Amino acid sequence: AQSVTQPDIHITVSEGASLELRCNYSYGATPYLFWYVQSPGQGLQLLLKYFSGDTLVQGIKGFEAEFKRSQSSFNLRKPSVHWSDAAEYFCAVGTPTNAGKSTFGDGTTLTVKP
Amino acid sequence: KAGVTQTPRYLIKTRGQQVTLSCSPISGHRSVSWYQQTPGQGLQFLFEYFSETQRNKGNFPGRFSGRQFSNSRSEMNVSTLELGDSALYLCASSPSGQGRETQYFGPGTRLLVL
Image 1 (cartoon, rainbow over the protein chains, first blue to last red):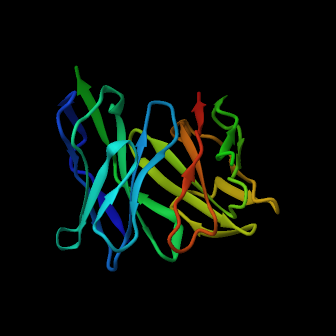
Image 2 (cartoon, rainbow over the protein chains, first blue to last red):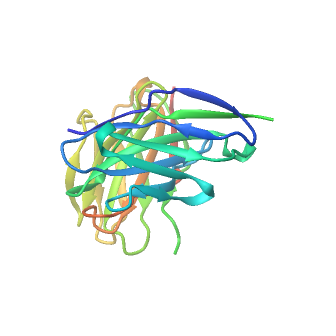
Image 3 (cartoon, each protein chain N blue to C red):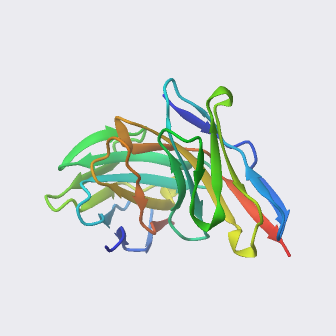
């Protein structure tokens, strides 16, 4: 069975500073990896996804993530954070035969200081 | 295309009652998955339906059930509600729930059990 760990429960960064949110996964084969963002009281919005190929993937809102098989990681990055990025971020893993069943990390809450 | 819609958005019930939540997937999507989100347990997979058949099931008691109709719309039912069932229930859809697919999430139904 697959699992996902997001080591940071809460991160605070200043507006304009860079951001990196960590995600580690456990899965026997190449996983399908996703990052979602959730604003308070809302559903999940997909930021980016990785299925195969280029290990650096670009997403919406200026986010990118890098898949590192050797470290079982899929960290999310943004070079310059905006106040509107404050939200909760979830890393998720899926598998080719069970794309309808994702396993989520516990989430990282991002606070942006003015 | 319209996104995933969930009704109702908010619901208040009392212990022992039952509740039915509804989800309409994106047009053309045949896989519908349900997740429960709570502060203590995070995002947990409930079940997935495809072509009116439950294809995957998470680790929830039998009080949680679901079904899917021929138009891919899905309902989930929780019987004999407990206080711990208070949560945000998220529905997600994808074309087939297999392969390189992304799940698209609805806004959720927030259930409060008193």
